[in-house]
Length: 157
Image 1 (cartoon, one colour):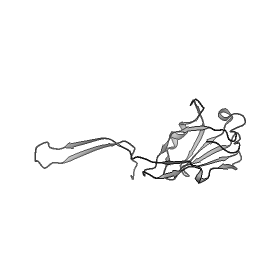
Image 2 (cartoon, rainbow, N blue to C red; image 1 turned 135 degrees about the vertical axis):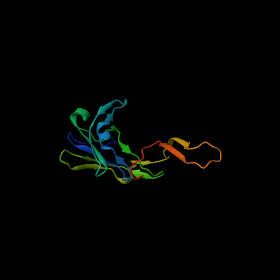
Image 3 (cartoon, helix red, strand yellow; image 1 turned 180 degrees about the horizontal axis):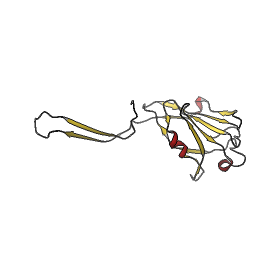
Image 4 (spheres, helix red, strand yellow; image 1 turned 120 degrees about the horizontal axis):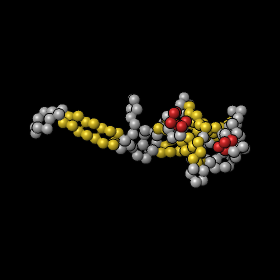
């Protein structure tokens, strides 16, 4: 991603997730990295806010240099801890904002900027086991079904 204007040291980049996605806060905070052109990782100072479904990358001199993030400088962030949308074929958009060290908005993506994802497939079942209580031909019996999903099923799904 690129910002149009400089983001000074102690400024921040906010990424607001689509409402169909969610953040696993502890995973995100511990797995937030800047990738250089060789895909080497540098840990970033990131915070997650599940109440407004966003995360922020703090612009620190240790990771962005003494001048912060320069405008039109491409940078890549790798973050873990998101839950994808559950619906297939739904396109959702991200919103990206930058702020200076006094909380003033510097840049903001517009909805047509192309920061979107579309879910293309449903999760596969990891395994299915069928267990009959009786293996006798023609007997009336009870069957147990054990299904191991390929994705986490949350409470209420």
